[in-house]
Image 1 (cartoon, rainbow, N blue to C red):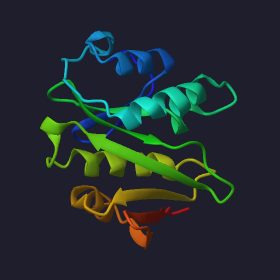
Image 2 (image 1 turned 90 degrees about the vertical axis):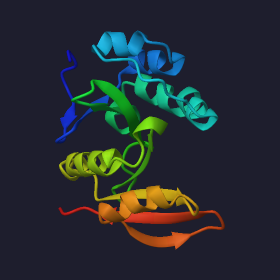
Image 3 (image 1 turned 45 degrees about the vertical axis):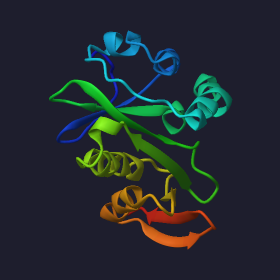
Image 4 (image 1 turned 135 degrees about the horizontal axis):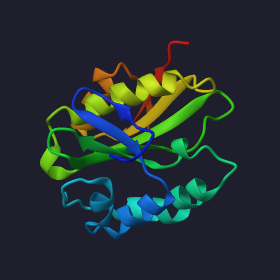
Length: 174
C-alpha cells in the first residue's frame, strides 16, 4: 500500500479514497485495485451510491475548503486477502452540535463475517479523536437486521424511527 493515511484494525485497512480514486471506484473496473496493489473484487454499486458520488461525494471531496475525510468513501480492505470487502462514509463534516452521519455497506461475498462491526469500531475510534465530533448518527431500514446488529455491537442507541427507518446515535467519550 502506497497510500500515506489509513486506519488499521485486526483484519482490515480503512482507506479514505481521494478524488481520482473515487472516479476509478465508480468506473468499477480493475484500475483502482491495480493502483492499490489489490486483487480485484467484483462489487455492485447501487444507484443510490452512484447518485451520492455524482451529487455529493465527488463535489465535496474536490472542495479544498472541506475536510475530505468526512465526505469520501473509506474502502475496507481485508489484509489477508488483499481485497476490498466494503466501504463506509460520513455524510459531511460535523454539524453545529458535533454530530456526523455514517453510512456503510459490505460487498455480498463478505457479509456476515464481522467486517463491518470491526470497521465501525476502527472508525469510531478515529472519530472520537476528532475535536469537533461529539456523536455519530446512523439510520437503518427496519428490515435490515444485520445493519442494526452492527450498530448495537458498537453501542449505538436507537432513539427514534420513521415508517421505514430506525434512527441510531452513538455519543462519543470526550
